[in-house]
Length: 166
Image 1 (cartoon, one colour):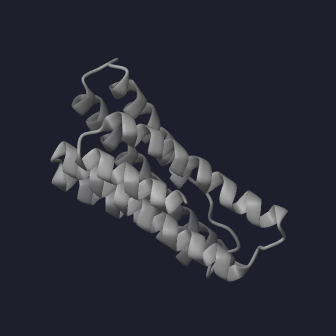
Image 2 (tube, helix red, strand yellow):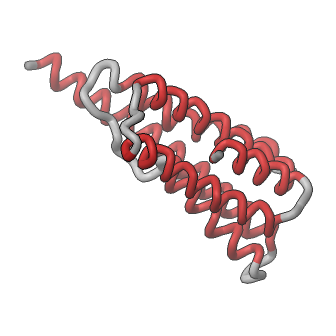
Image 3 (tube, helix red, strand yellow):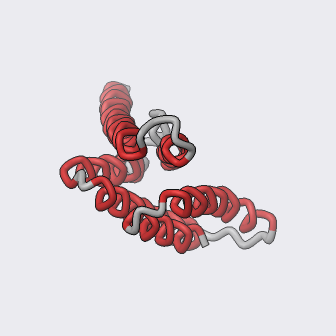
């Protein structure tokens, strides 16, 4: 359901329906939080389920970021946002092949979604011109994603160096 909500949010961005994009981004976030909780509640947790959820999260990220990119006509920024968002997940996944845990950084998917929801809400209620507000949020989202990926890279490097010395 979170993936479907993300696609509808992306299409809403593309058609400049910011209010609808906001509703569906909030729903996507809600479903993203609930899917793991429901799986635990129903005792339906599996490695494949976690993998599937992660893959759908990447597609959801891509859909929303592409929709926002098309709305803003900010193609270079959109490419960087997409790369940064994917690198947050990739650096963690690769690092955790070599070290126990790599969850450092403040730019997880939830935080990036919150940035987008807040800036979109401010744009919808007219606190600031919509395109400028969303552009600033998009820049912030991109910077936080890249800083998190760099922090994870650095953290992994330092842990691996320490382990080599032991």
